[in-house]
Amino acid sequence: MQGIINSVYVKVGDEVKEGDLLCLLEAMKMLTPLESPVNGKIAAVHVAEKQPVARGEKLIEIEY
Image 1: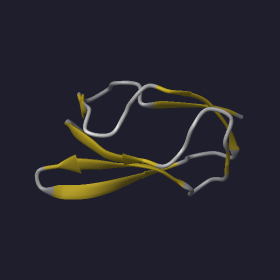
Image 2: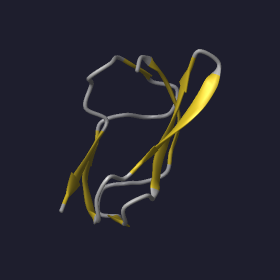
Image 3: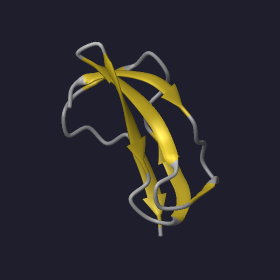
């Protein structure tokens, strides 16, 4: 989904569990929460708040 990153809630090194909130994506005047699909550790964060993103773009990497 194309939009703008509203908030980022994780940083490199953070431990996350499946379902944890990673960031909020604003698209078409709606906020969509993006949650972790797996348990793991944040390996990379490729986005920042207020950054526009395109469909298919890598946002956050998780090592599991």
